[in-house]
Every structure is written in structure tokens, then in C-alpha cells.
Amino acid sequence: MKHFSAILLLFVCLFSTPQLFAQTATNNKWETYEDEEGNFSIDFPAEPERETSEEDDENLGKMTIIEWSATNQESPNENVYYNLTCKISNKNIIFSDPDLADAFIEGMMRGLKREKSVELINQKQLTYNNYPAVEYTAYYKDNKIYGTTRMCLVENKIVIMSAFAENKTIKSAQPFFESLTILNPEDTAEQPTCEDRYFLSFPAEPKSEVQQRDASDVDLGYICIKTLEQTDNSNKITYTAIYMDYPFTQAPLTGKDLDYFYDKITSRYVKKTDGTILIQRDYTIEKMLGKEFVIEASNKGTYLKYRMLRVKNSLYMYGIEVDAKKELNNPKVTDFLASFKLLDAAKNRKTEETICEDAYTLAFPGTPKDMQMNVPSAIGELKMCMKMVEQSNTTAYAGYYVDYPKSYKNLSEEELNDVYEISINVVVGKLKAEIVTQTNCTIEGYKAIEFIAKAQEGKMWVKYKLVLVDNRMYMYGQFAEAQTDFDTKESTTFFNSFKIVKK
Image (cartoon, rainbow, N blue to C red; front, top):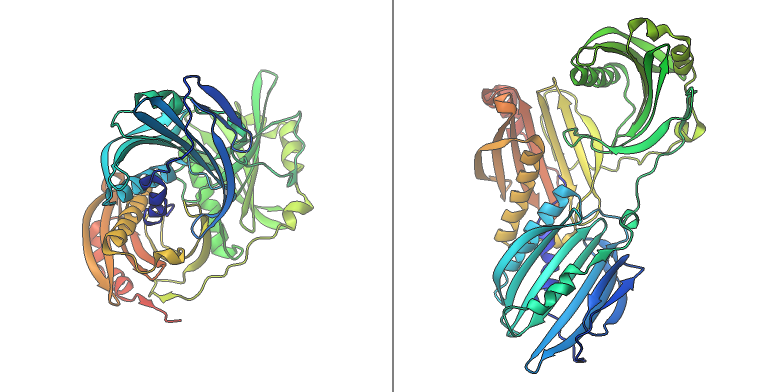
């Protein structure tokens, strides 16, 4: 799971209590002020004050806070209070990630609506330079003042702009909201980069880039890819080399597990190209077991020849695509494939050791694989400890836990419901599924949720149970081909076997 809304309530205090400034200026001349540290510019109708501070938030970690504020007397009876607060994550949490941003905004607005001292008048979601944003107007009963606030999520920054006045409509504040400018969008957060981990003799200098993997891939991450297209005797040859790091650490794959991993990669290429496997065989690369496959791609009328090697939690793949089958034996192709060498940087890469506890027991129908996944969220990177038994491409059993900050302890019933709701929406949204049933239940005396959902027009079914104990979320479930698979003895035994291991 990527995000949970309960933690977003920590921002309510920022939005619910307007900050009023004693120093007042009268000015009709708007001026632009740049902030190099925040990488933005903003217009104020009066000279603003700027303050910076550091915040070590329990949920978000260390944050840099930049605050610009000014008060302007815009009529004899009207002062307007302007404020811009920019919170910068020192952990490079990408708040503008689409999934994270949606939950962030949803949780913030839900928390704001529950504030008894705030009357929400209207709200609308916006985009700012393709970044997600929300704008709302509220009446703050304690201060007897109206406020319009716009929040933008820009990479690793939360930018909050507010204008407060005694009048409901603050038309003069519109230039303030519209003036926000990101000075160098490409510098707003640290961008992923590729390392030199291998050597390959490309016939010429290849193009290098970083791509984000498809969101349908459960192993989300980045691909470092090099490509080169050449024409040889009217035949086009495309050379490609990639590596990708899986976002979990597990024991090195061997035997059937490694074969299954390679088979899944090959199957993806077959599906992607609507192709036919001509060759699939073991291949020794760097004295390690790798694979080589040749596919005839029906949708392009081309041929692919690739080799792949799994080293720890990284996959290396390199190969070619040609127009004619005979070009698979072209000397340029042969030399390219034979030239692959792993550099010491790749061979000696350290991976994070698993620190998962035996926090629960489950009667898996087989020996589960232990996995550890780092999950980005609005409260920083969370560590997910997972066990899984995969019986086929559509049948699997899983159990895992995630530890949240201590602020998750002793949530109100409403906040607990929010946590469950967002958690279920993330699972269902990731699978593009729809919920068929959802019921409350009790697990070891704690309120829990059980749901069944279907995906792929009923070709895949999923059943899950969730329970939050203190600040630890436990989830366990089954993926199946049919809803009736949940009625089997194997499934019933699995779901009834869950027990929390007491510390």
C-alpha cells in the first residue's frame, strides 16, 4: 500500500487556524519575490516577511519550512492577510505522485470537514503546471474570518497559499494565487540516475534514459535503459540493455524459484509482442545461471533475442530486435551479446538485510517466500514485511505487516475507518478491481475488515482481511481464479489460521 489518510490529519492545524499578522501596509503595487531555497516566485501587494525553520516531524521526518507573510490594507475597512508556506521533504518524498496526491488531498479535506471550528464553504481540485492542487474557502468561527487556501503538491514540496479577510469573497487575492511560479521544475526533486554497472560493446554510442515501470507491475521501480538503432544492408537492428532493481530484498533465487522468475519475464515479452517462443534455454553469464530466449513478434513482424541474469535483487537484460530471422546471426549481433561483463560495482552491491519479525502465524499451502518491500508514502518510506506462496499466475496467498508511526495508536473509530477505507481503495485500485462484498469482523478482539473484489471482468478474484493493532497493520489474503475458490478447505484453513505473535 502506498498511502493512508489518517496521518494527513496532522496537517489540519495548518489549514484550520489562520495566521494574522500585526504589521499592516497599504499598497496597490504588486511585486514579485523569488525564493531560491524553495525554487519558486510569488507576488505580494505589500513587502512580505520571510522566515525559515526546520521541523522533525514524527510522520514525515525532517522538513524545511519556508514561510512568506504580509498584511495589506486594501480598503478603509478591509485588511487581507497573505501567507505562503512551503514544506520541503528532506527525504525526497514525492508528494505529487498521482496515487499519493489523491489520498493526500482526500485525507486533508476529510479532516478539515471534521473540524468543528471550521465551516467549509466550497472546494475544487485543480492542476498547476500538471501538478495536483486543491483550492477551498472556509469560515473560521473562532477568528470570525474567511479564508481561501490553495495547496499545490510539487514533487517533494507542499506549497500552501492562503488569503484571509472578514469578507467572504476575496477577489483581490486572485493575483496572489495565480502568481506562483516554479523557477526550475527539473530541480524540484532529486531525479533518479543510472549507475555504470556493466559493460556492453554497442556498435555506437547508445541513448541512455531512466523510465518508470508500468503501474500494473507489482514491482514498481525504475528501469535504466540504453538503446541504439542502426541499419545494416537495409535491415534495422535495435540494440537494448536494461537493468532494474526490485523494491524488495529477498534471499537469492535458486532452482525452481529462479526458473519461475525467468519464465515470468519471458512470458511478459511474449504477451507484449503477441509473439511465439522459438528458443528458450539456460545460459551461463558471468558464471551464473541466466536465460536466453528468441521470440518471433507477431505484432511487429520482427525477431527478438535476449539474455537475462538475476543478481541479488537486480535483473540485467540485453538483446536485439531485427527485421529478418537471419540477422540473429549477424556478427555485429553476436559480438554485442558476447561482450556483456558485470562491473565490480554491480557484483559488490550491498542490499539491505531483512529485519522482519515473526509477527504472525498463517497456515500457508506451501513454503512462503519472505520479502521486504520499501513503500513510499506521505509519512515517508515504510517497510513492508511480506510472505507469499504463488501457486500460479492467478493463484497466490499472501500475508504482511506494515509499521506506522506511533501517532496511529489509539485512533478514534472514525480515523480507524479512514485507515481501512484508504487501505482497501489502494489494493482495489492497484488491481483495477471492484468490491463485491465488504464486512466488519473481529480478529483477536480488534475491529477488522474483510472484503472480496473481482478484477479482469471476473477472471481474477481477491479476498483480504485487514486489522490494525496499535500502529501495526496486518493484512492477509488470497488471489484466485473464481470466487468459489474461497470456499475450499485450503482457503478456509488459511484465513482461520491467522494469529498475532505476542512480543
